[in-house]
Length: 438
Ligand code: SF4
Image (cartoon, rainbow, N blue to C red):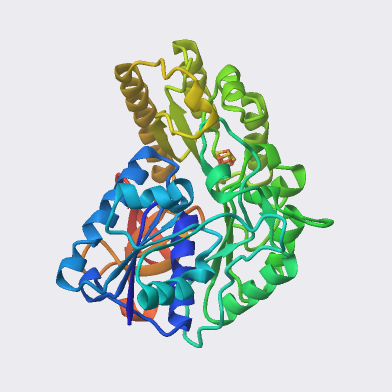
């Protein structure tokens, strides 16, 4: 039996898909290279943005075409769309056989068996809140791992930002026992991972008894084989001094942070229920730069939130310039059913949203080009991921998370994959750097 998983959305979903594959492989499945050769087709989907929801639903329908050739093929909708829509998925996409929410992946092999044996359909959703919680830890693979790996430290979110569906589809915040996190981290590095990214919806709100997130970062930093440590996605409200002080002080903690701000206007932030001010965000950014002058900061921006005036928008532009973001994911606000903001009038005209988004893109492009230009002439450490954009090049990321394509001196691409290599940056391109092995 073969399994094919199609993933849409965030890093959390990419990680969940890897765990779904592991669970199914342990149940005897092999991984298929394409949908055409799979017996079980999974769409693991995000629903934070309307576009991702549409993509997931249409992909489930598209994968269902495989049933015309082999009617025993099963189609599964997993993840946040499954949790949000539950059995309604069957109305939206009748070819779907199974619906499984993010806290129920371990039940997938049994669900598949049940539907194969008895026919019909099956759905499992709901959270393990109030129980110890299942964090789908990685098991020993016996093989060499990719050099970069994700590690879940907490799940769910209790923040209730007014535009966000996550609390309803991922449940309340639950932190994983630190002993399990450190055990999985040790396993991952012993199998070849050199860079770990700690995952959680508000990852820096992590707490295990007296053990805070800052303390967890310090414990991780003790892993001798670990070279790089990152975390995503932090919330500005939980950027405590203890966490800020880790940047520039811990050997492994990389000089980059994606810290979503969403808006530079206090009025909009209050309506979004973000529970911090623009000034708080500025102070966090300044604190990070005090300990780690060269840190690369990136962010998320929403334009056109209900009630956003021109003056509010200019506050956002001002904050972007002041912080000097090296990159941003920016979006036009769109109403998501089931969120508190859905009750607000979506009153910023589409044309105004488009103009504001274009302006944000323009400013961010300029800032990120300046950030890349600063790297020219520097020698940077690159974790090599694979073949580069041009023949003879390899590609990888710096500690500041910038993509570098460079020409190796003597070693082949295969020899360099997963290695930390020093490269001299010769030029900055629109979205990457180019150079040669130092
Ligand atoms: S912090 Fe806010 S935006 Fe982030 S997942 Fe939680 S509710 Fe959503």
